Length: 268
Ligand SMILES: [Zn+2]
Image 1: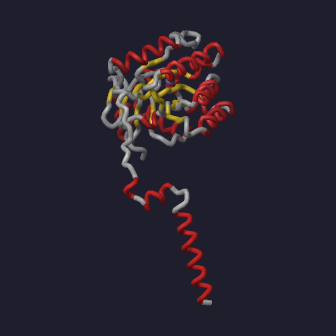
Image 2: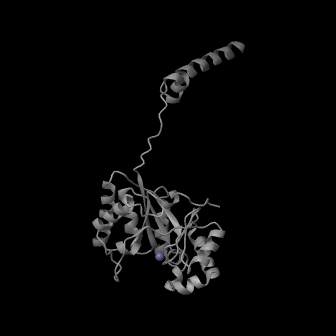
Image 3: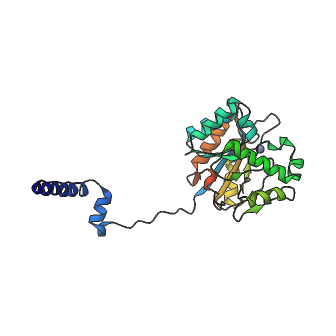
């Protein structure tokens, strides 16, 4: 019995030596600590971060935005409208498609009703407007506390605070319950038919210029606002792909979801 035990420990000892000295990098470092070169992470101060954001979905243009970002492997944030998500099987299905790729995409709160496009009245009633965002939170179940006001470029993060007189009462209420409010640095505009106005090249030049002249809310971080519906037609969705490809050609640009934006209030 005792001999068996000794034999067992001997086997275990040799197995340990073989494992430890074989292919494990960690094991090698532990055995020969002085051979490990301390390497510092390379910090490229020229790196600039772009945050693509798509507003007002789920709508018929949203699947194209999902497909293009997936194909180009670029992260994006979808500011969803609770009503659009909850009113149809299509809305729920597209919402699930975004949700499915949480590595690439984030869903953020863009209100429930989008103010039914009656912005002045919406912002003049901050208590009901706040309830509208809470209702959207119930339906969208975002895993972050990022919001964007309908039809208004306001900001409320840890230190970045920008709000017009009209939206300020609502933004203060949102701030008090921990919401981050994120606007945008650059918008790709659309015409009365909902089609993109500027060319992909013009948009890429705007990005270059805003970074160069440090005209973004946070230095070296740029938020682009687009609307899902702009890319519902193939001749327009190709412009989104071209824009992303132009941005990727600049070796100093990287893409992130807005959950990685600096200075966010913590998720509570
Ligand atoms: Zn909107």
